[in-house]
Image 1 (cartoon, rainbow, N blue to C red):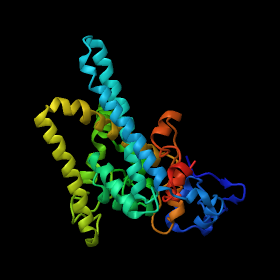
Image 2 (cartoon, rainbow, N blue to C red; image 1 turned 180 degrees about the vertical axis):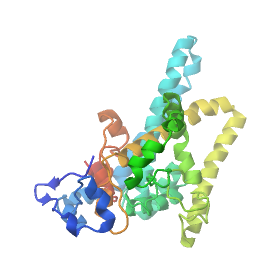
Image 3 (cartoon, one colour; image 1 turned 90 degrees about the horizontal axis):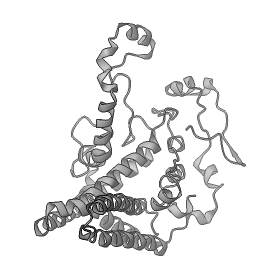
Image 4 (cartoon, rainbow, N blue to C red; image 1 turned 90 degrees about the vertical axis):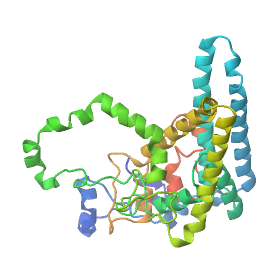
Length: 354
């Protein structure tokens, strides 16, 4: 889904001729894509001022509601194994996993709001709430906050964006575009048949959905190639600057505290118990995060820009609003269907973004 030609009745996308376009923008014009030329100031002027007002009390109310739902689901799950009928147990546990995964994804989104400082006007409150909530979900809060900020500042940039960076033709072993016809004639297509087999596709989908998020945090999977091992847990990772050192340490300590709690619970109860109550819902959170972010930043019609053609608003408009239906859109606090607005104005609270 390409950026719309019109954002508001008073804000229309201006035409830019191909002759005036920078050389680096040529691929966009080969696809008949018109580069957006309006400014952030012009877009902001079309939005009511109250949409940028942040309320810490309102944010805390959303946190309280989500934590209450998570607690009630947990308490309900403690009754599942008391049913004598195995069919009820086999149906109830997946229901708990799915619902708890949805609720905890909403909690993750609220911590995400904290990372953008859109949760409240207090940076201390934002970072405290965000650190607690993300640590509970094994996310290094400040580490992710820093890399995510870089993603927002360079969305759609081929060499500066932090995640969902498309590979170039040379990186995947394809010939230059002018040599495609000759290469296709010479290539043995059977070499790639196994890669397109449904079972292989399904396998990689499962791996991506379940482990794509922790793989991104641990080894920067799908992120920018820095030429060396990159991790959100490493203080000297190329993602960070020296001034971020203590933020990374605090983030790591939060995750270690959560892991320590899980290990202690496994020793006192059992690994199976921790798996049923925490690990499986956690995997569902991973699923939703990968699915949501992939759909928001991936579409055949979305361009990615190189230096010279890229600017902030063009990059922000290279995202896609999706909808998972009213229930999930509500539980995920609007992160799915208001993503373009979020990229344009990341400090706008989610409840004002619709």
